[in-house]
Length: 187
Image (tube, rainbow, N blue to C red):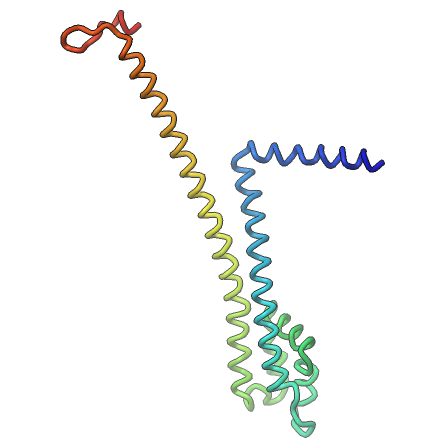
């Protein structure tokens, strides 16, 4: 049974060979793999940013004294690093500042929190999307440049082969004193 599974897997591997022959499909597949690699590194970067920002939020907003009117709300969202990271991830993926504005005076009494949340949304949401788009676009541009270079080399090789063929033909012709051959000699 295991042998048959391996044979089936080898048949699937033939599909990958077909992809190599179709240049456009190959470029798309290769671009997809590049995009996955870029998304992996952007995810790592965002995890580090979320971790650092959640440490800042836990230290500044998550441990307020109980007599603060917003202590319960802030402790619920920024009480520890795990919940703070989840709160910041949700804020980054779908900015919901009205949730914070519903808390009477939370953002207006803490202007640094307001500036932090706005900067986090701008950098986290828009900045990371722009970074990801830029990395993928640059990768596709680079692959296109490589493809164009391959085409140029291919053209140059064909021209060189044609030149050598013409030189070989020219050297076998009977030429007159002016270095010219008759049409019948060439045919």
